[in-house]
View (cartoon, rainbow, N blue to C red):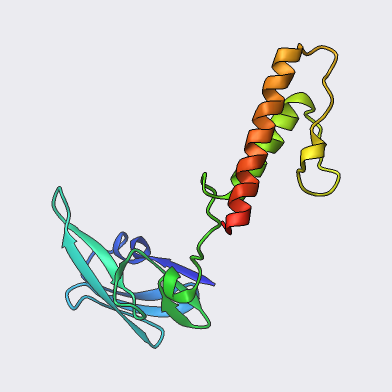
Length: 162
């Protein structure tokens, strides 16, 4: 996969036109015409005034016609990360996600036993360890309550389909 940033072309230019090679592909850039030819592909450019003079340059993605600072080449076609399918939505790890609460329950267990590994591969109610000899009962019960609160929240969200 080839990754192009606008700085690779514009930052090193002395004049408004340049020719050269970028990652094995010949390119020709013309800032006056706001165009870039990379191999046989035409990529339009756009600029806007910068705060302290000069111009800020952008590629115009050939796939979706939006301003981009980075384009990716997959199978010889340059486009932005969204068009190429590089940017995928990651798993939502917020308080509305049951996985978040299972991780919080696991943290409570690891406060008592730092080397704990879930025997079934996941945290369950019966995984909570016995009270360590050095721990006072009120502290142990506080951890036990937190663990059960986190597990209840996780199961509630899981059953709702979150």
